Image (cartoon, rainbow, N blue to C red):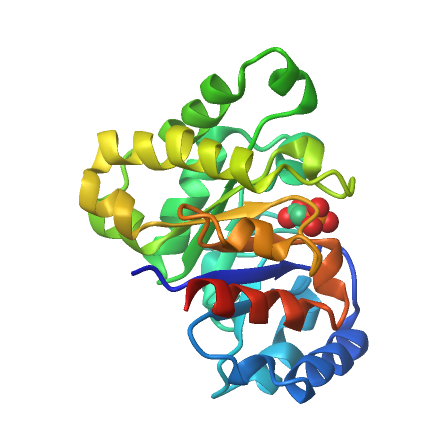
Length: 255
Ligand code: PGA
């Protein structure tokens, strides 16, 4: 049995005061009282300390949206794994926006995953194809290649404990979510199956795989009722109190 995990990727939204107020709202709505699911919020770096303070001892976890793979030094503007670990349990890595706008390659993502594990952070690795790749029938090639390259050199224990988010890029922020069935098929055939080939059946069975891309309270059940979808990485809808509803649906569907 895999515990479902619903993570809110706030992207570049909510300064510290707004983040604190919003986490207060989530806690008032009882997000930390929902059993059988892990809920994670992923604020911008400057909002991490205040959010960490509010979540201390609570069943609401914190993730960063990035880190740099070097431990310290002359890397102006970057944030090290240790610095993230001070406030977080999770870290989103390889998000398509980072790959597209900040030129992150699979090689860099792989280094970041290893650096995260080295300090005890759990990576949420994002993979997914563009609209053009999808239309050209390349989803399998793209997604399995990302899985292989990004997980290269990891141990069975590491992969067993991490999270992968399948996020078709055409579904991110567009309101055009994939169907539950399509997402489940890609996750099963192009993520879980290659992981089984590389790291063994048991690892693939234990690995938690999320769907991401225009998840909302209205379509959450469609995804969470699928056997291979273990939660969601939520962008837009994670900025609103609605996020609690998505977490609740995940708990209900996987109970
Ligand atoms: P979205 O974003 O829910 O706004 O589509 C998802 C993501 O980018 O992780």
